[in-house]
Length: 79
Image (cartoon, rainbow, N blue to C red; front, side, top):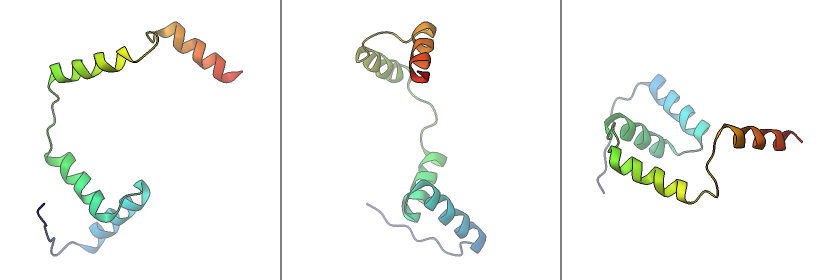
């Protein structure tokens, strides 16, 4: 795995990065890696791959989720 050294990071930016890391429970290094991955990572999902993931997830459900089942779950949670 490669290493990168950042130089001349403005104090304000460093403070904001550190605050964001603390807020999300990450190390500063992990926070920066997450932000870089988000910035330059793939932005579009392959539709077929996404569809396969949805189908696989649905197959693990005992029943389909529809408006009626959502309302029932909400009501049960309020009891």
